[in-house]
Amino acid sequence: MSGFYRRAIVVMLVAAGAAAAAGAPGTQPHGDGPAKVFPGDAPAPILGDRFTADPDAHVFGDRYYVYPTVDRDQWKTTEFRVWSSPDLIHWTDDGVVLDLAKGEVSWANLYAWAPGVTTRGGKYYMYFCADKKIGVAVADKPTGPFKDALGHPLVAPGDPPALRGQQIDPCPFVDNAGGKEEAYLYWGNGHMYVRKLGADMISFDGELKDITPKFSGGRYNEGTFVIKRKGVYYFMWSENDARSPDYRVAYGTSDSPFGPIKVPENRIILSKSGSVVGTGHNSVINIPGTDRWYMIYHRHAIPGGNGFIRETCLSPLHFRDDGSIEPVDVNHPAFAAGSPGEPLGK
Image (tube, rainbow, N blue to C red; front, side):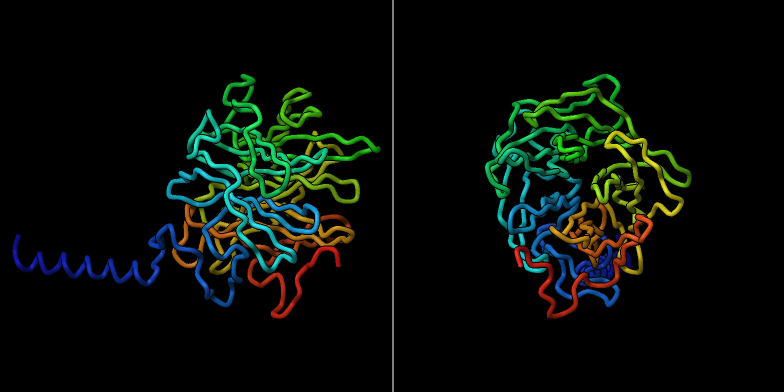
């Protein structure tokens, strides 16, 4: 190799190292937390100590809880963690609640993704992805520890045979209609599935239903989340691939937890804007006793993020007088400086 080419290679290597140190796109390493300073059009994430995604948020008692995916390269995550807050501003990492790497799930040791948590009868149930199957774990409190309830998946590919796509992204939903409490589990990739859960919350008590919403200009991908407001069921889901800057959230409504889902013409309620891209896989919380709502979602980390390096954010969610949902503003903080946030029990 000539001296000229050796010098050229050295220059390129030095330049590449400088770009990485500067946080060039795609170079931000795992193991580092989100940045501390953001562009003017990008509010800080709410979970500032780790890269996280697919956040599942709830109010349990006097605290808010978020159960996200903890990002690893190629989505090779092994643990589930939980964060909690008294006010949606100050968040505490409450630690690992279930760990595949420690053998706490006998049928899987990798791909710990997108948990969905609910409570019923004084117990807490976490439906989780592991090895691209869905399991269920039970705990006595929101911070766990959660214990695998079955010793085998609740949902696995081909069981039942009608299942199509990946069996991921579980969303439990407990409904109280006409004074009768019923629970449902939604999930899917490419298809949105639902089954009624049994009273024990770890088995099914109903047939599988494919309720994939139909619309033009896009398709359902994953990340179903369900809420109920004023008697209307709102179904939310993510479109496009999680690695795409165009990952986004759409919604539809129904009069039943089994659909059919009516999709409005303006279905997109969360999408990229400015330096904020890859917005998707959301959950929603309602402030108890009010009609105030917040969407919790992930975006590609800023700077240098991608589909494997993401951060969890929060924005207000607003309903119009006709019940339709306004697009979410991803470019401003949910709370002004000095705000007390949304303290519970006040």
